[in-house]
Length: 73
Image (cartoon, rainbow, N blue to C red; front, side, top):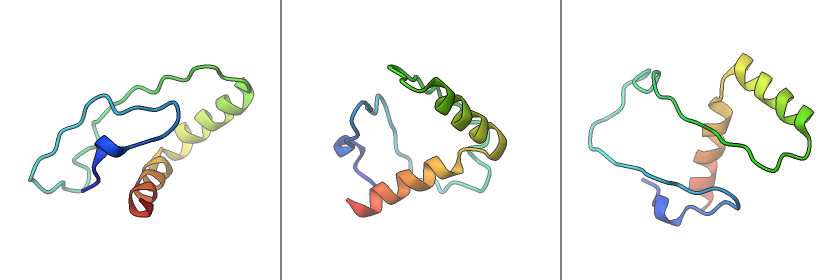
């Protein structure tokens, strides 16, 4: 389990997290929602293109990158 208190990414912060001992079942987090706030955007078209890609293909890649961050620490 990653120690989120050590998470460091410029411009990002973990506001709150909780752990539990129950195993997650496939699809258990399907209803989870979160808010992403983007500030100081220099290339609006690039952001809109990326958001469209997430809308079409989902955001699994974001979670893969987070997992890789954990394993490289």
